[in-house]
Length: 194
Image (tube, rainbow, N blue to C red; front, side):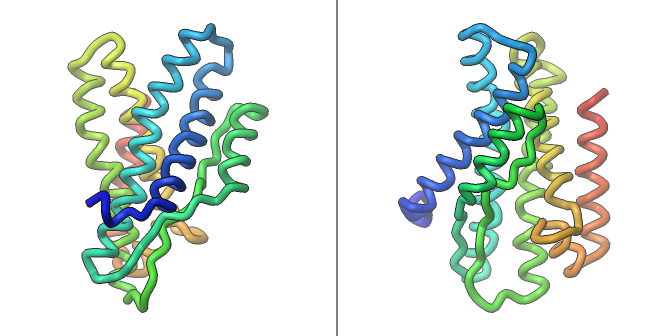
């Protein structure tokens, strides 16, 4: 599987993973933290946000490859900088670190299914994180809660039917699938706050 991810794409994924993790770390330590707190929240971000982001993008890639297309993640340096600066200055994360580009004459159905693969992956990741939250307790429970919430947020954000986001392509392909994925994403997000 790793051979299907060229070195440039691996580098872009790694840089985006680190930048997003730094942005979320800045949010988590907004009230202040010592060096151990900073390390803890960075590790927490790597595990929760980083994994959610990387697997979301790889889901798009491998779904496209299943249809015979080449697909590759490309980072967006400006958006990575915006994410980190906004987290540091405003305390919010707007993370659009890049996108997975699919090359070829993709049909509306294929494009919808490829686009749905990312949010579906995040919804599936909600399950083990929810289990950690419910049954882990202590530090494991915190990892579970953050992982659940982050995956639900990424799924919900990406299902918005605007611009280049996944939701617009899923809606164009199948309104029923769009409604189901949007409801599941919003439901998981709301549940993560209770």
